[in-house]
Length: 632
Image 1 (tube, helix red, strand yellow):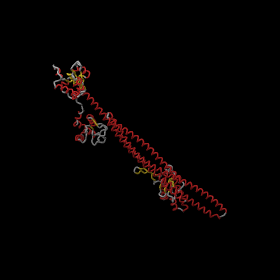
Image 2 (cartoon, rainbow, N blue to C red):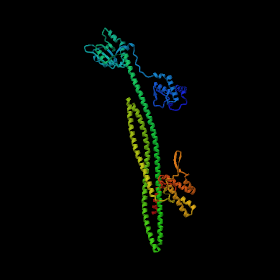
Image 3 (spheres, rainbow, N blue to C red):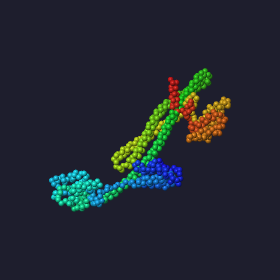
Image 4 (cartoon, rainbow, N blue to C red):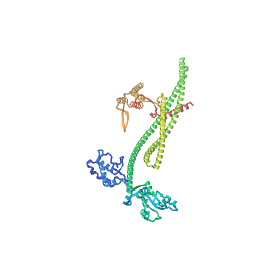
């Protein structure tokens, strides 16, 4: 629940105190959680903010500050935080005194607190009888085993050959465990009446050893034991050691608490940056998906256009071949007629000879044209095969590109996740954990490998895009070549594929309408004149009979039916001529709106649309096969 947004409250400033009871009751019943299961204090009304965890004092200060109000806080937010402050003071006041403080162990008695001990803790052993077993008795290992239960660190033996008895110093740990072991060591001798007091009161030389904890009188003695104690230790009371240990622990705790606070703040900041990077990466992936979808759609559209262009070229080639055959038949007919006129006068014979020469020249020209046509057909077939092969390569490259794009997106996601994890692991590197460092090394190696894979995918992606563009350019060039090769072929009702000049007005509706109003000879003249007049109107850049219409956010240009010229044309000459002019206007506006002149286009006359490259190539192939059958 996030009540810290700047939404408008439904009560005024004066009603804040009345509204406090409801959120306070929710806090008291536990519907709104302030203290989490692990003991962390949080503001339940500011869950979306950067800072989440508070100490008791900081959270109380935060709640009081918001409730007393700043100008950018509304009345509802102030009331919620006023209830939080009230809840902290009434229900969680004990949290204010729960800062951990280490406690020093309590000394045994007040007298021992003031008594001076040698520190680090030392034990004294006297009256060690050196006899025949001197080697073992004067060995520190022997005494280490003997008093092993008190965990001594070392035992130092003091003796010489002139004396039959030796002394020893037992060294314990300098912590409280060492102090306990030293006092237990002393109690051992006290229970056996072999303490320091008993040693001083001893009048007869005993064969037993005596022992005690080293104190000030031992430290200040002139014996070798005193010199050793002065070199290795100091005189300290238990109270002094407790105070120093307590102060040292408090200092360490404060330093650790400060470091933990800094670490938590850094972790919160890293988590915030990681979330921000994750959201940015998600948006970037969505944009890439959209671009990829647009790229695939554009590629498919280009392929459809290429197939349409090839089909249109083939259809135009078929039409040219049919016209060539028609002209050959006419020339053959003329040649037969000339042969029948050989019986005419000399002048007629001379004319016939001239006609024969001309026919021969035309036949030669037709043969040359046929050879050129054959070469052009072979070039078209070769072009068709190359386009087919390149189209298959482009499709395979597109499929490969789609797979590489998916792999690239997956790699980028993994790289971003590894970077976020690596930042958190680097932050934990100060803990000197061998496992953490090993994990960081593995993650770093994995990240480097994935970055290299991503770079390889980028390079392959650029290569495939360049190849796709080159293939599209070649398809467009092929379409232009087919249009150029079929440019001289006019539209024919018997031919399905050919060249149509987009923007030229169809004269047939003019002829049909004029035949109804004029005599046959005059109708053709009127139709031609009227068609030329409106063709000139189409090329006039100052005449633009279009209007922009917006449908569902999509704007497009439509014919303005209220245009004066078009309205006059429809009223005077009827719908058929009006529709022919409108069709030419739309073609002009689609293919060449700025130049205002007609442009050639491969056309499917049977279906009344643009011819595809596949249709044109199929048409040319059929024409070539038909020529071969006729020649054989």
